[in-house]
Image (cartoon, one colour):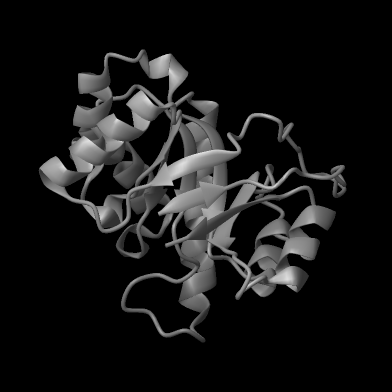
Length: 211
């Protein structure tokens, strides 16, 4: 899969929310969904040799160790490769998300990730309409804020969040940092214009994925 980051417009700073510059995100990256084991390592290695410098993985993909092997075999310094990983639905909640991120760092063999995302707005085995989903994803976001403060995640964001999820998160008094990124499915046949416009108006960079 391929990730694409369209050129962002000017940011709007919501009151009382600290914003970060959005000029840091690579325009194109390699997604590793459905890649496992040696096949994943080989694809990552080939991509890095071809000039890719952004690799996207996730704990739910079960390939973080294979991604790490590809980076190691490439000989390219860690500081030159932008690595993204994600907290899976089963690890939603403040402490669970924090612990999951630390486990991802261990599997990746990294002291930090460049971008850490909440993979999905819902928690595993939780009804769509349950308030527990909101509580858990807000707890996860508090964990991401802490991880960034500790230098374990340089940038933090969300994935697959819709406008109601974002409105709830931004409106939470405990939220100090608005998500820097919302990674969503976007392509000519699924453009999500309303969501993209909302993100743009709140200083959230949209990163598109397509398989």
